[in-house]
Length: 109
Length: 117
Figure 1 (cartoon, rainbow over the protein chains, first blue to last red):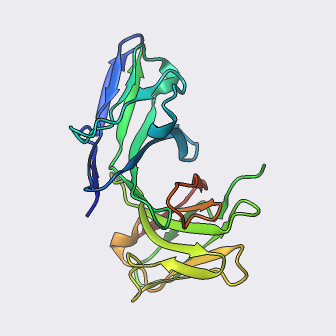
Figure 2 (spheres, rainbow over the protein chains, first blue to last red; figure 1 turned 45 degrees about the vertical axis):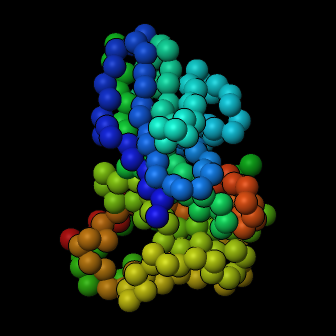
């Protein structure tokens, strides 16, 4: 069965410091990975997907099939990055997502 | 474009009572999802509809939970009777037809926070 692991419940960094939110997945096939974000008092929304290979709000994520990881990175954290981040796995068929438990990112001044 | 609408936003009930949540998806979206998000966990899919038919309800506790989407648009999720462990945020999401091999983005509503006392 597929599984998504986000080992950190809370990650606190200072403004301007690099950020790395960890995500590991378990799936024997060819996965699609996503990062969803939920800002305070806002709804859950898609941040980026690995197949697009683009940078959104300065964030990037590379799928590493050897390590089964999809870590989210940003070189310089901003205060507005403070939010809850969820890694999600799509394994095809039925459009279903398996979410990780989420990491709360707190960017301090 | 209007997003996914849900009501109520908050609900407090006593255990063994019943409760219902309503969802209105984005116009034209054929697929509708109900998720349960318990505090400290990620969203867990309860049920998925394609138009007015159920695609997946494997994780729906059918002894107490029920859901319907009679006209293929709005949906209701009901819990009867509620238990303490049902305290959670219930999220509704919708997407274009999502039965193929490519992911169609799911758009989420604001959620309903249920507290069972």
